Length: 428
Image (cartoon, rainbow, N blue to C red; front, top):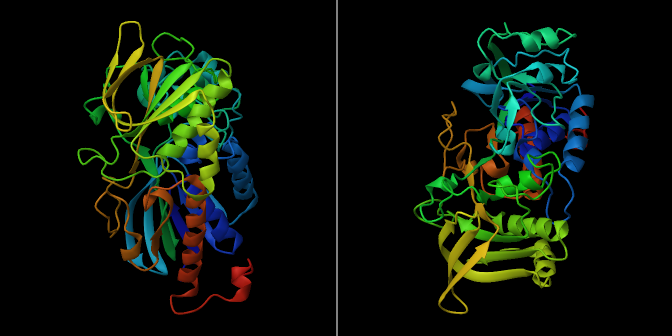
């Protein structure tokens, strides 16, 4: 029987599952499609409700990974085949070339010499990087990547600039075989494509952005270095509208609640208020405000701010004027009639769509109607955690990942054999 768990996805859920399993004595292998670990959490500016930066938690986990020989990981990797059963799964992994080896010191000399550019997906396309780039300043692993598709034909400037011999343009894809007793799917989520929502003009309005884009605008390592500037003209944004359920709870788009959007918008309203405390305003248009349990105090804090307005109403239309200002037309449910109000910028609370949906995962997985993995009907030895199985916030996803680690330990022990006390406490 294999003594290993393979974890598909290196976001906060996958990392947490790997660390918890490894520290209890089970070897863990993380497979991540991006060139870095951390997933969507790495792209956040702050967590709610404490409003601390995400790397205060990610860095601790990265340190645990580096110090634990029981954990290994592959970035730029994807699972191409799964066979076998609980206790003896055989998994084939394709590892795509990074074109930069372990000699890289992230000195940036290669970037300075590169003349080609590419859209920066880490910042959701709001700026660009060179063809050779560091995914972001806190990237783990802290190593550059070459996007060969963006390179100028025949250019070798980055290779010549690297005095450590870290850039190797001859790298080829590799195939890795992993034998594991269990598999955890922590495939996470993608932001819903707001261009599919017909009445909000996201595709044609520069100053209508999504909530994930707002996180990057506010982040110190984002496209504007943390300054809240609107995309069209760089104007400081001091009057911002937040549109809740943008595409969510809508049978034409996502017919479910993504669970975190209300709290995300409340959190982002604090970005506006903290940046310009004297004269900024935030308006939240909502269907229902959902801040259950421990988040109720956070909601009440924002409700007490006289410069934060919360209006219950369904947004009917969003239009951008030549000046760049954006007008929102809303059906005012409590006040009656319609509201037309103009803002510097509009932020759409676009929902979370499971990354597993349409991903052609090579395993006998069962999905519920919206594309989330049906965790109650999976083969023995296979589990799912975090947003792979349902919309959830970071805290709940980490807790769920701990449960996935426990299930992996049970698979190692044998489905009919209870875990010994030493195993539960971290012994072998």
